[in-house]
Image (tube, rainbow, N blue to C red):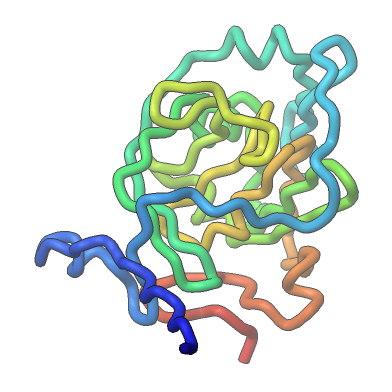
Length: 202
C-alpha cells in the first residue's frame, strides 16, 4: 500500500483578508525565514548605523544612540516575492522619516541603497522610504527581533516585496542615480511593488 502525502492545510481566508493579498500571493500565519548568507553576530559595543551620501548631516549612530531615538509602532502586511504574505504585523522601532529628517536629505537625492551585514544591499526609490509606514524595526509583535529575522535592526517597507527590507541593516546611502542591490543584480525588480507583481526587471 502506497501512502499519500497529506495535503497542506492553508489558512482560511476571510473576504477582507483576500482583498489585502496582492496577485499571486498566498496567506501564511507562520513567518518563514529567508535570507542570503549567514546570520551575523551582534555586538552592541561595536555596532553602528551610517546614513550617508546626499545628506547635509551624515550620521553614525552607535547602538545606544539609536535606541535613544523616538520610537513608533507601525502595523503592515508583509509580502514575500516567493509568494507568501503575512498580514497585520506590528513593528516597533524608529520611523524612517525620523532618520531622513536628522540626516537632512539633499534635493538631488532620489534613491536609497540599504547596506547590510555581509555586503548585502537593496535599492529603492527614496519615496518608498520616505513613507509613513516605513520603519527601521527592532521588534515584531511586541517581541525583540530574533537574529534569523534581522536583529538587531531591519528595514521594513510594507508596500514593497519583503526582500527590499534588508535584515541586519548597517547603512543607508542616499543617491541621485539608482544603483542595483544584490538581488537586483540577478534580475529582480528595482521597485518591487507587489500589487503590480514587480518581481523581476523588465
